[in-house]
Length: 212
Image (cartoon, rainbow, N blue to C red):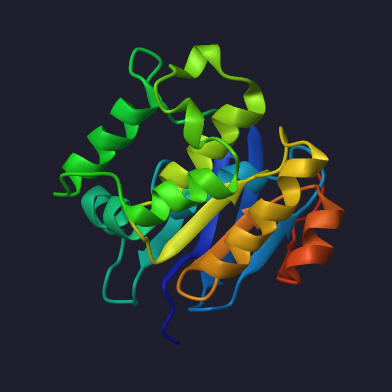
């Protein structure tokens, strides 16, 4: 079996009577970036969650960082994989600064990284650090959630519809950041955004139609 960063091997995934994936395999290879496309219900978000170890296949194996790690631990997955879904991964009761300091301290860092602060500046949200998530717009929350997903420099970055709440003005700086991150991090993006796909020029994985 070839070496890969993370993947799914001959998996089946069912929810009730619905089969989302049937004997499906997918491997994320280093520096091979992908956009995952498909109609609603085809399993794009489910695929990202399974790659991240948030959910488990009904049958088959989830593999990470080489075939020797069969069904790897949650701790290993969390350290090596960053993920941002469409729902913001932020604590409503904490300010943005407190959210980012909490993540930094979990990683053994005493302060928010310079890279994260620069990304906030680039996306035009650095002046909102004292605000709490519920007081922000959907686009502002999405920007902070995206930065949160990559602030600890994971090996693999999984993004679900990263432009869904962004206006046209916000797209260009995000594309610039993603191109920069792609130099060191392998990125998998689930998206319907054909403009984003054209701008990124990632490899495409097309999922079939709706679940059976």
